[in-house]
Length: 50
Image (cartoon, rainbow, N blue to C red; front, side, top):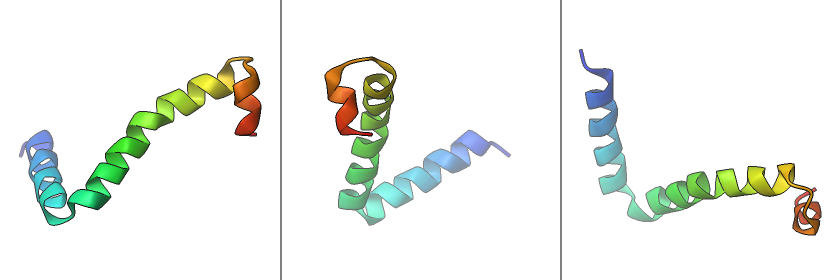
């Protein structure tokens, strides 16, 4: 069994079933590193998240 293949298939079905939700999830995942970067860096902007 190929787990990555199964995951890709499930992913495709999920994206096909609910595009808006999927897009929101992708955007959230893409913005996570930015949040962590801002929080770890001593910029004034970081205080907005705390």
